Length: 180
Image 1 (spheres, helix red, strand yellow):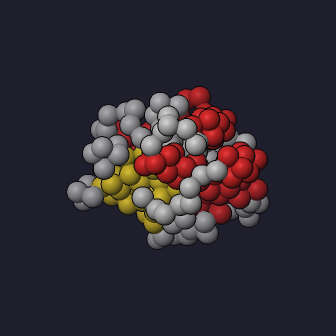
Image 2: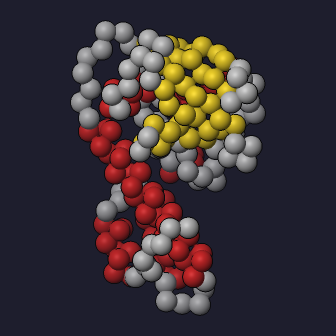
Image 3: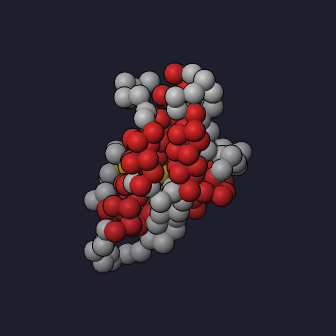
């Protein structure tokens, strides 16, 4: 675990003002009520604080992506080569407006994966995917970004690739290469 400073009620209030995310605000409220009490030990306090900081960082990145104005592209379809760590490959096409959730479902279907597990797309400093399966349906918007918008934002081009991790318990890893 990183060496984050000990959370203070004032610091948590400042973090609360930096987020619009309902779940993050709930976590901040809970940690604020625990801070300085015997209801939480130091390890779990740091863990909750680190989670809040990571959620806020991801929210800032999402806002940056959403505010990005992509250039017009000639083709609104991306052909992707998805390669599992084992070497098994599949070609998948996604439309500009398909979400990363749609792409995850396509990969799950193509590789016969059991649905319902957490996943994450990793494009360097940008990570896309639900944070927690317990509250994904209520709060999470981390995977509803449009694939074309993000590919454009990250300035990815033909032959560039990014990673996909499925089922954090099994750690089923993939490399996704842009073919067109």
